[in-house]
Length: 471
Ligand code: PHE
Image 1 (tube, rainbow, N blue to C red):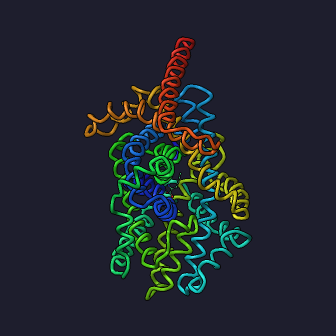
Image 2: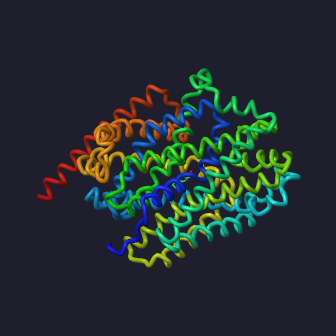
């Protein structure tokens, strides 16, 4: 394993991880979910989930990565000492493939909008333009182009490809977004948008909590890239000097900052044009925002700056998603990196093309399925860290830092008990609504608590039996 690639610097890792986290989730998915779920109410719940679940969960995934020093299948196999670890790793790899399949279709749309924005091709009829290009053969072509760009970077590996590109693109994203947020504030008619986004509406939240919590939590996991084994893979290239708690905080805060900043651009602009952002769904960014750009002075320039930013953010996330399956082929099957990149890309070219041709499947995969897979992945991570690794996880937490020592035990307690209960609650939520069964808040809480306790007993007993039989 000594010839395994690694990050040149800890800063490189942090930038690549923030780049991987900050992507279409922050700029495309976040504003329309926020707008469709009550604005500030959604924002509050989302922020609470990021802090309460996202941060400890991300740290758990980093701990698994650096402790295992391998990609998900091999790492989880050796950390759990059991076959189901490999299966879980394989599930992670499948999750990245599923996400990248639709991600790269949206990346294709962004690429196309970036190319035509300087001449404002879609300014005349934004709705028709989006409708005509979003699904079909042209969408396939742009999906392939986007995938090609992502593959070209992963082809060159961690230090030469991913780290180098992230170091340039991520600061670019932040600088342009800041500029756009300031510019937005100078536009007329944006006050209603700021109010909708930033003023806390307790009544709405109380009345809609159950319908807001699902999408808000799903979005929190999605935006932090949590539960897919992507962060696990990135952390597997770290050395012992890195402080995992510090890096986790920096990454979570930066990613949230980029999401909130994107909302400060998108939501007020939509309101300034009198567009109801909640109606747009996945097309909101393209249709409603395009309408806004078309009517603004210098719209072409602003539109270009905006789509270049989204493109860069999408590319840095796309590479994190592709790296996981590619590195798995490299680590576990000894396939050379370049060949592995080509193989996985060919597979994704096919699956993504399928989604680019069928909008109904695309909707399901990019919403419910993605959220569900990430939630299951995170649940498994919490079980492994909280109930199997325990002392080893604490040691990994402490390696490379003394500063956050006092947080180590509370963190492990959160990962062992709070996270599984909340994550099971979310799973019950999603599954119940998928199956069309109505379970009340109390019922869901009871299922989550009983499920967690039952699983804790099974896992602890299982690992005790394993230990006894290995003596
Ligand atoms: N976090 C990325 C985004 O916000 C998407 C992603 C999800 C990437 C899961 C990797 C794993 O765009």
